[in-house]
Structures are given as C-alpha cells and as structure tokens.
Amino acid sequence: MQKVLVVGTGLIGTSVALALREKDVAVYLSDIDADSVRLARELGAGQEWTGQDVDLALIAVPPHLVGERLADLQKQGVARAYTDVASVKADPIADAQRLGCDLTTYVPGHPLAGRERSGPAAARADLFLGRPWALCHGDETSADAVELARDLVLTCGAKAVTVDADEHDLAVALVSHAPHVVSSAVAASLQSGDDVALGLAGQGLRDVTRIAAGDPLLWRMILSGNMQPVAGVLERIAADLAAAASALRSGDLDDVTDLLRRGVDGHARIPGKHSGPVRDYVAVQVVLQDRPGELARLFNAAGLADVNIEDVRIEHSTGLPVGVAEMFVRPQDTDRLAEALRFHGWHVPPVAGR
Ligand SMILES: NC(=O)c1ccc[n+]([C@@H]2O[C@H](COP(=O)([O-])OP(=O)(O)OC[C@H]3O[C@@H](n4cnc5c(N)ncnc54)[C@H](O)[C@@H]3O)[C@@H](O)[C@H]2O)c1
Ligand SMILES: O=C(O)C(=O)C[C@]1(C(=O)O)C=C[C@@H](O)C=C1
Image 1 (spheres, helix red, strand yellow):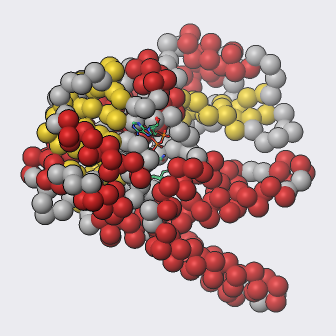
Image 2 (image 1 turned 135 degrees about the vertical axis):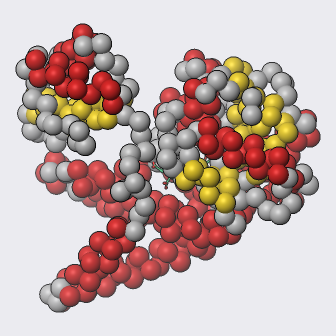
Image 3 (image 1 turned 90 degrees about the horizontal axis):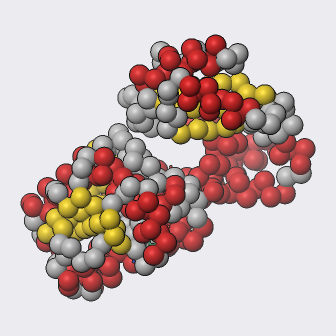
C-alpha cells in the first residue's frame, strides 16, 4: 500500500491520513468541503487529490453517503480496492449492492475509535492505536482487497477484527450506539439543573457525558442505520432504570444493589483496561493556580526543558482556586518535564505507571 485516497477529510478521514503520513504512505485528500481539504493539508495529512490512481481509497463520509461515493469512485476506476469507516455496516453494503458496485474490491470497515468532535481540526494520528477495527467483507471480496484494507488498519496501529456485517451492527448497538444515547439522556437531564448543581459537577459526570457532545446530525445518521438493535438495548437499560427508580421510591435497596453489582461485572468485561495503554503518550499532571499567565508560565517551563507537549487537558471545578493541567508527552520526556516543573515551583504528583 503506497498510495491512498481519503474521501471525506473530517475527524476520521484526516486521522487516518495523519497516521499513514507518519509511515510515509502517499496520501491524497478529497472532500466536498474545500476548507476541510485545505485544513487537512495544512495539518500535514497529505496533498489535494487531482485524479491520481491509488492502491486503496478510504471513504470517510456519513454512513448514508458511502454507497454513492463508492459507486462514483469505482466508475472512475480510481483504486485497486475500496474501504469505508461508517459506524454501521449492513446499510452501506445494501446501498452498494443496490447501486451495482463491484463488491469484490470493497472491504466494509469500521474503526472503533473516535472523538466527540468533528472535522479535521480534531484529528489525531494516534487515534487508532490499539483499537479494534472491524472488517466486514463477504465471500465475494478478493484477497488483494482484504490484504490492502488489513494493511491500512495495521499501519494505523489498530487491530483488524473480521466480523459479519449484521453481527457487527448488533454488537455496536450494545457497545457504542446505545451507550451514546444513554450518555445523551444523562447530559440532557442537566438542562434543568441550576448553577449550584452544575457548579458541583465532578469528574464522574464528565466521564459519563463526554460522548454526548458528539454531532447530533452524525449520530442521527448512525442511529437511523441501526434502529431495531439499538432500540432493543435501550429497552433493557430502561427496564433496569425503571426498576431502580421504583426500588428507591419504596426504600427497598436490594434491586439497586443488584444493578450496581451487575454494573461492576459488566465494567470488568470491557477489554483493554488491563492490556496496556492505547496511546503513546504519558500524562504529567500539575496543580495550577487559577490566575492569569499560569498556563503561559507552564508551557514556557516545558519549552525551556526542551519537551514537546503533544496534547493538554485542563480540569477545574467551577469556583475553586486551583485546577489540574494534564500534559501528554513522550514517555522518554516524562522525568525531564516533571523535574523541570518541580524546579520552577509546581506541585507535580508522581507520574502514573512510573
Ligand atoms: N466520529 C466518530 O467518533 C467516528 C468513529 C468511527 C467512525 N465514524 C464514522 O466515520 C465517518 C465520518 O465521521 P467523522 O466523525 O469523521 O465526521 P466529520 O463530520 O468530521 O467528517 C465527515 C466529512 O465528510 C465530508 N463529506 C460529506 N459528504 C461528502 C461527500 N459527498 N463527498 C466527500 N466528502 C463528504 C464532510 O464535508 C466532512 O468533512 C462516519 O461514517 C462515521 O459514522 C465516526
Ligand atoms: O470515543 C468516542 O468519542 C467515540 O465516540 C467513539 C466511538 C465509540 O462508541 O467507541 C463512537 C462511534 C464510532 O462509530 C466509533 C467509536
């Protein structure tokens, strides 16, 4: 795989492009939105596509547009093989069949990695590291096409998982789509919260609602391609919640305790928590005073220590005079950064896992 075309340079397309560029694959970029291509190009994700032939074309557009993009690209004979990243799989495959696409060169795909933000500015080269990436090809798919798609997945640092398309859609209803709706329901309940309540929000609420910030229009398109399976999971969750509410009303806490215990068991079944980090970077935490110039001072100290900050996250509870900045750096830079920051007077807790 030497040349790849990315169609749709949003969050996922640009993240794939950046990961491929890190491995010196030639990447061509295309999108109906010229600004999106320009930004992706400026981020170093590749060059604008002007009709070059490629080994593999990756279609990273909303699910209901995958079929028509595939038909169009195949008509132009752009690539040896084609894959996509849509969050549902049965519908795009059915669309491809209906539009008369050549299924021998199409490998339907779905990386189980993403963010609650859209567009190329949110893209990250390390988004797919250690993540599962579903490939849902049928018997008709050629070995060459499958090999190219697997090569793409491995080059992005992800793990290819071959799964039937219907089985995939049932699975992601449980592990991705219903959880998204539940997160939205929790976040929606905050609309009626007053400032006192929201001022007391801690990390737990942020963990449960992070994905609720995702683009509602994209999620509408995802859910519309997986309605019955998602409805089934939501009905089971709703029954648990209704039982918990009535147990709380009656003061009999056994049902609630049972739900909490089943929650601990279910949480323990999520793989990956114990199998090492999925990101390359280590987080160095610093307690920050909430005052002007503090972040500039912090970044300056990192710069003086010759440490590149790959990413940064700032957590602070409203109304409190301190916050925590988490700086993500390469593992080999961790000790140097922590030492430099302590030298400049910051409190730096021991770095996790070191
Ligand atoms: N967001 C996630 O966390 C996530 C994770 C895995 C897979 N996906 C899937 O990836 C796909 C893209 O999602 P995203 O989050 O990158 O969205 P995004 O909105 O960031 O990017 C989509 C891009 O597609 C472009 N586009 C739309 N119609 C087009 C067309 N006809 N031709 C060319 N480009 C077109 C848009 O201009 C936009 O730049 C979706 O199918 C989604 O289901 C998303
Ligand atoms: O982590 C996130 O922000 C995501 O939304 C990622 C997530 C997921 O549910 O895991 C969401 C939808 C995609 O189809 C794949 C991955």
